[in-house]
Image (cartoon, rainbow, N blue to C red; front, side):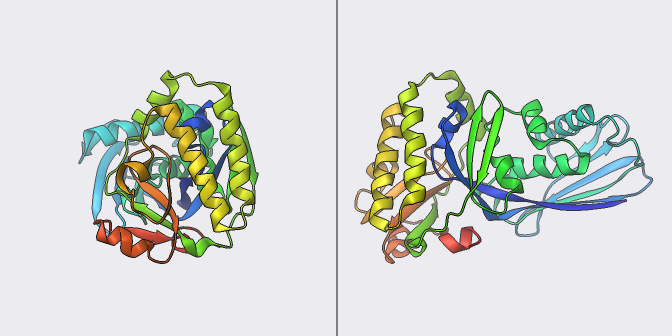
Length: 302
């Protein structure tokens, strides 16, 4: 038996983690993602190897096929998480693993893990397809989360995503701004811990008015036909999140002299930001010491 699949990474364009509270969000699958392959043998062992985008082996472990007990591993925390995911998949589909004797799993990211584009969500989605289980059920059996990243993993186009009491509504849309050449994704050279951010949001209560404002802004972003309109939406969005979280917007905090607008993406303070400005944007951020800057078409398919 051989099995191969691929899942897309993700960018949460609007609403940030307020998607957990029911806000409508615009989410876009990235060109980058994670591949997964399985080839069967009769070893009685699952030999797991994970490779980074530069081709280096960054994680490996061997699991007993029958009970998924770890035999050897390069990282105990990661192997514990992996076995939890696999055991959950087997609970959702009890025939999973029953008809194989052993085999080799190879996963490969085609983006640096520090980018925060979904190394965990792409893995869960890939495993769900291998195990023939619902990816959202698998996600929520192991982690908290909105599931927007799972929706992106399978989508070929931008989506509107809404979550309400684990009821998921996904609508595929066309979203490729005519001013896309003025949009840049800048990595802040540090990664946010997604689980910490999610736990923070779950513990907080926010007025429904914030959810409603972010939902309306999501529609406003989609309707923008000019860069100036888009920049105004960014300002409104940043102010809403800033006031709700009592945090400074990223532009005010780090990039006051940028001649354009900047929007945080996902968890504030790490991973990528979106810069909307002129062609001098790349030079500006390079001069600030930021080297990972992707144009819109480098991040997404048109």
